[in-house]
Image (tube, rainbow, N blue to C red; front, top):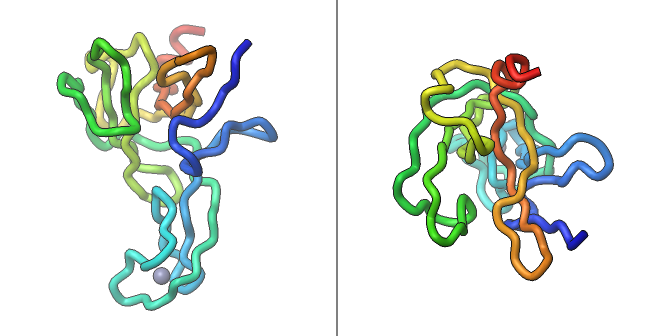
Length: 149
Ligand SMILES: [Zn+2]
């Protein structure tokens, strides 16, 4: 088996010591969350803090919107060649109310998705090269997982 490395560094944990999670930041001054993690300026315009703590974000959220990505999106979403269409969802995280984009797991199409559906974070292979799997987070519908069980 080859190596398993994140396709983008520092955006998520691989779950080797516990469940995988997105890594965001929490402002020390006002508690505002950000993803990807903020290092310089707080997103809250009324806050002047520049101290941020890296935190694991919610592993579940609800679909806020979704699309059939028929165009090549920017990194890190896909690097498949030739380009294979896939579903992209914007998910509102349960606790932080942050909206995070991501691919949906293989085999799930827009017909399977509805706004408001609950999804769960999984770590999956984005692409493989030279015996190395490059990993990214994806969203897996919780309902579909139950149906398939
Ligand atoms: Zn702040």
